[in-house]
Image (cartoon, rainbow, N blue to C red; front, side):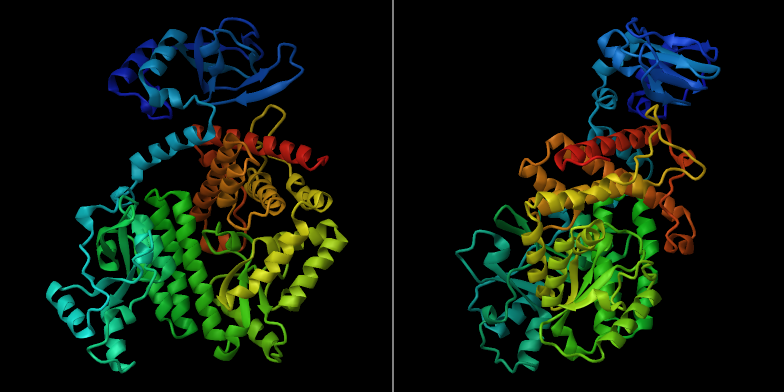
Length: 609
């Protein structure tokens, strides 16, 4: 047979050299004319078919029901290789050429190679993991696999709480370290609560600014609880933790004990990226121009991390933290200091959920403390919106922004808005509540959001009629699948936001409100809903994996487009031609997961699509 079969395609790349050689020897080639039945329903299926070129449809025996459509590099009938006979009919819809792998060779490969067999597992998480592993083998940098170990951390200097500042300073000098830990609560079980941290800066401020004497006990100036990470965690997780909490060092724990300390210098020496450097540039910015320079480097950071195989969830978490810091710093530079404790800036939509990676349209709002009279508020908010545009966040077409007075209200005003929307009960009102449900406080007096969110959950939790109206938009956009179960191609490709991302995000948001799940992140909402047995584990896992796939494929396409095109929002249509056969297969599988979830939502809330 020809030696052109591509063994680098998933799942054949899972085979070792000898298995691939055996595969090539076993393959045969068959030609089928257009309209020819390749496999009849109920017949034994003696070979796995791998399409070289052409197309094949899968239907019921009477052709009244269409199940799928297959083209170049697709496989069929996998199910029959295990059951021994085909449940459906397969017919060539155009002249088709296929490789044939005999059933006995296919089942032998499955028996002797678990990784190969796992690809044919119907579980979406398993199949996507294999695809990610394939990408990792090609381009994953070593740092993502690096874990926090004893050989890349430093031992801690631990001082008794009554050690005086003079002695503490001398011991830190002798040990050549810039931080020490001291016991502050010997009753706490967790190390991060038992110990406090004292840095050289703390010592300097204590003596020079707070006028403390050298005899002062070090326990009096220790900061507790400390930020910690578990020994064995990914080093990348340490980077995210430092970035999010704006600290230069973390305590490394092992169970409830201290294993050592990890500081920013060590992390940066082990990583080829500079996310913490970016975070420091944001923190040190004193002018909008400086902040804009820092914000402009964010896309390059995303490209570096994505191209080096960083997991989608890690990437979202890191960039969400950086976005939050950029927006918070803009707030601090624009809003006069005396007003900052009297208001709270919210990010909404995908920013509020922590699921946006590249900067897109502004979605934000402001909460004012009750009784605040701030005549200049409207002008300041207009300036803040303009500043965010300067930082790369374009205006929201729907004007869900702080320069719109409708999105600037007091605590009581927002609570009345929630009540009014619930009383109206129409879809427009429900979408306003959906926007508020994802709100995340990023600057100012963040606790002002709590009573607003409490009122929202109080009014919607277990309200079946309201929740049914709330859920309806999740069914509005059709899943881009044909009657044959294939991905709709169209002129520009499927809209993955409308057809894939939105139904999952909004459906899970609705369930979160029903069951009082206060987290805003879709992945964490899914985890809680699974724990509370609202969703089956397989359903939660498949929805999570589908959402990750949609976001990853969209991001890859975004990064291939000019930055101004992405900013204009033209980035939701997937170019199917750029996807591998395995990615198309996963995409098709994921869209079927969405279709099934929409059917479940329709039944759960008694809706009709």
